[in-house]
Length: 220
Image (spheres, helix red, strand yellow):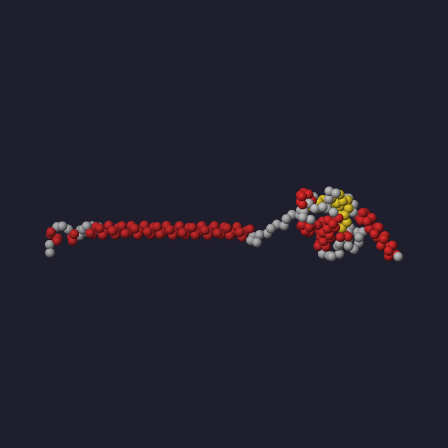
């Protein structure tokens, strides 16, 4: 009989205790504002008791993840001052003592750690699921696989190598043109000498008597 009396007292006292712990502008509480229409438009779902339970479950998950303990559950997440435009206040109680609230700073850390998971659970974002007083989380910067300085170094080295190759090719082409020109000049000079000899004229200034028309030089 005593057990049943205690049980009834707990059932009656629990809502009153929760009402005392969770109030508007509570020192350790946060206000949440949800914009379903803005986020989902015609696909917006109804915010009902199931969604409220889901929110309490996601917050219990965030608290477990933050403190690395599995003693948090939906009973530790208390909501109050709920409005039809989907806004409410909530506080988190200690798993070891239902009358003691978790400090606001610890709740904020838990929300920040699991913010992405909470948003995804409700198909919302930082702008449409607002924890007033907790600034939106910034996206994690993407670290490229290759360091930027290495990319710049590679580009500079590539440009230098391309310049060296272009210089070598240009020098080689100029050398070949020069050698070709000298060869053509030598060939022209040789052709002139051959023609001169054929005409009886030695280009070095000596007269070739074998090609003369004078009978003195052609008699046997």
